[in-house]
Image 1: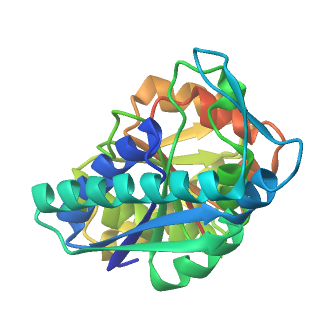
Image 2 (image 1 turned 180 degrees about the vertical axis):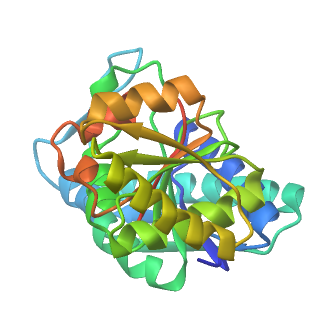
Length: 275
């Protein structure tokens, strides 16, 4: 996969702005352009129009009535802050950039805009929140269902070596391995291929297939195996190896499991879902 344009979701929140910094760094390494997207969530405007809608300030706890006009003005302020943030980040990294403001459903608009980009980057909620809150339902939906690659970044942590990629021999896994190889060359040497199986013959066959793909791209790798496709062994390997990024094919059973959110919450590195 050649990264020509990276789309980063912006809303001026701390985790969004941290993702912007890491994304601009990645765009500079891969010589990709950067597209910042701010979505004025139409559901917020609908909510503000309800007669019982109220806003409670923090930490003052002062309550006041919401209205569509004040909500629209607030969204414009946040959009301006997001534009300023991407201007500063892109100029600092010396990369091409653009910024777009749109209205609608967050999931729908991201899916539409992603047709113009090779990768969507989302910010992970800060580690100070409870683990179950590290990934919102919107981000989780895009990671598990979107038709293009999604990279989830945690505040203060950029994509780095080593890359840990899961490989099971499927077509999507081969494509994911190719992405991992290119990312490894762009972000630093060090690629670890994880194979989940207990049959030694299958391990040898999968390693041979992976070697063929990597040799064609001039990348060396080392291999790890786990006995089952469960989330906890994957988390353990990622922590033990000090993975700089975890790369998974969207078709893998890790993505299908209900505890995928626990995986996102517990690994100490960005998570890249391909396919």
